[in-house]
Image 1 (cartoon, rainbow over the protein chains, first blue to last red):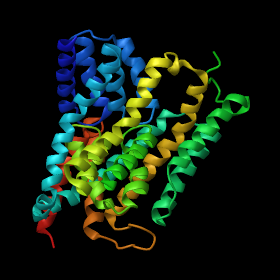
Image 2 (image 1 turned 180 degrees about the vertical axis):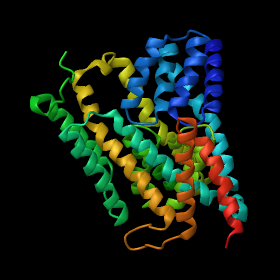
Image 3 (image 1 turned 90 degrees about the vertical axis):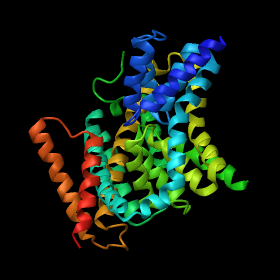
Image 4 (image 1 turned 90 degrees about the horizontal axis):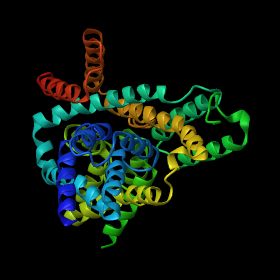
Length: 192
Length: 190
């Protein structure tokens, strides 16, 4: 048992170390290392896990690791996997944070980051636009989308104290209401 | 000591309310962490940029950085732990007790309803970051930055050109590398 936990730990450290570019990259790595190479879970199980990981709070990468760890070795497994996957980025970022002041003080580096900061805004706008495909466009959903977009723009521009938590809660309330008020449900929603 | 608890709890809150991926953390990070004065929006931007080129989810990296900046190693540890805890607890609960979680019709409907909000927040966060880069930090602090405007325009042009030529969107790491170079080159001008 201990041996397999150690193996789990090491595999997840590797996954944590090589996940560049966010949660979805980690899923590809998990597919490779855990499904394809070792068969510890099946592709179908991974697909189910991804859906849950996307829909629950927290980074998808962590959610995935916790769940896969659980499937492989119960609660201990989930603790081992989650810890292992976090260690590499923790170490790297911590080290960077120690030197970041002196690093950024190098003029050329500051200029590089000026450029990078411009890129980041563009990238996230692009992500947002891509994600617009992820929900069906109904009057209700479009209203919610617009309210969130404009609402946040206003909050940011006027430095208001308005937490995104309210939006999440609004979504939950609308969702629950949709279950009981059929006309709010989308066409082709889950009426199975 | 108190700061460690504060870090843990704040990051726990951030972790709990970040749904739907990396960029969605920006609004809540702003409310909870930037508002506290722990880090500035510029630092958030810098660390997002670093996160794109290092392993690890943005959320975890942010927690580590914020924690480290406030209370060194123990701070980094507490903040990261706080960020991870909600995921861990919720997922374990679901795994143990709700095997039919993803098929539950109420859950599905709720998730579908949250989505437009999350997408709106992400888009808004991106637009705000763009505005910051060109010098609009708030309605009160509009300070057009020529360098920012030009760089943003150049990078946007590069993104479009890449898509036209290669028929697929430019990979994030590539754009970041190019933007770093362009930024450094701009140091030669004024």
